Image (tube, rainbow, N blue to C red):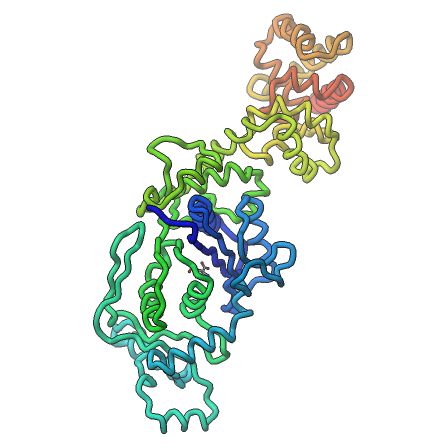
Length: 496
Ligand code: GLU
C-alpha cells in the first residue's frame, strides 16, 4: 500500500480509567502506521461522556504512551494537558463543544437531522413495549416529521431537544475496510441515533466524525468492536458532504481459551504491567505482534524493524491471542539483552520499593546472579531479597525439607558442622566455600543435595535461589554466618 507524507492517524481514548493492553495495542498500531508512512500521530481526548470520567485518567494515558515511547505529534501538551501542540486543536473534545453544536445545526438545516423532544420517560415506555413485542429496541421516530407548529409548541413548553440523525429508511451503507474488505449494512437496521444531547454535549458518533474531518485524519485504525459504529459514521460523512477517511478495524484480543480477555488471562492495566517489571521495549514487541506479524516465525523484533515493516497488509482479521507466558518469556529475553549496568539501574526502584534504600554496588554485583534467572524486574525482589533484607525467616518446614523431617537434631548437627567449617575459612569466595562444604556432606554421611538445600534455606530463606556459593559470597562472611547461627538457634529451640 503506498501512502504519501500526508498520512494522519489518531488515538482517541476516553479518559474513563487506566489504559489496558487493548488500548495500548491500538495506540501502538496507529503510531507504527504513522511512523512507517512518515505521517502524523494525533492524540485526542474523548471526554464527552461526563458521567464516566475518571480523574487522573488523562495523565495515566499520556504516561502510558510516553513510557512505551509512543510520542504524539499533535495533541495535549504532555507537560501541561490544558495546552495543545499542533494546528488542529483543541485536542480535548470538551473544549470543542461549539464546533459540534454548529455542525449539528448545519445537519438540521440541511434536513439530515432533526430535533427530538421525547422525554426519557417516553423513550423508556417505547423501549418496554418493543421488548414485549420482541422487537429490537429503537427510537420510534416520533419527532422525525414534526410540523413547524408542533415544534414551536414543544419549545414553548420549555422542552430542550436532542438532535437526532435522519437515517435513511431504505438502502444500504457500505465501506471498504482495509483489513476486512467490504462491509455492508441495511439502513433499516440502524435507528435515528442521537447526535447532540440536550445538555449540548455531542454523542461519540458526532464528535468522532466532526473531529476526524476537522483534524484531517486519513486513516481510522481502531478495534473491531467499533465496526457497528462505522456505517453511522459513513452516513454522517455523506450528510456533511465530506470525504470519509479509510477504515481499518483491528482484530480483537482474546485469552488463550478464546474468551474475552480478562484479568484471569493476565489482562493488566499499564500501571500494573509496569509495577510487575515488564520492560517497555518488551511490551512494545509483544503488543506489536497482537494482530500483526513480520513473517511466520520472527518473535523478537526491535522498534526500527517494526517501523520499517509495519503495514496493514500483515494485520490479520482473526483474533489475536494474549498469552502471558509468551510475554514473560519475551520480557526475559529483553532482560538478558540489557547491559548489566543498565539492568542494575532498572532494578533499583523495584528493590527499593521492597527494601527501602539499597546499596547500589551490591545491586550491581547481584546482577550476574539475576540476569539469567528473572523474567520480570519485580521477580528480582524475591530472588535476591535475601541480599537486601535485614534478616530472613525460613520456615521450619523448608529448613527440614524432605530429608530431615522428624529429625531436627540431625539438621542441627549438619548446620553446626557447616558453621564450624566456615568460621575457619580464610578466603570468602564461592570457590573456597564450595571447597569447604562439598566434602562435608560425605563426612556427615549426607547427600550433597540435602546439605546444600539446608544451607540454602538457612541463608536465603527460600528453597529456590541463585547458586548457593555465589549467593554466600555476595552476602558476605558476617551475614552468612549470622544466618546459619539463627537457623541453628531455631532448630535447637525445636529439639528442646
Ligand atoms: N473514544 C473511543 C474509545 O474509547 C474511540 C473509538 C474510535 O477510535 O473511534 O476507544
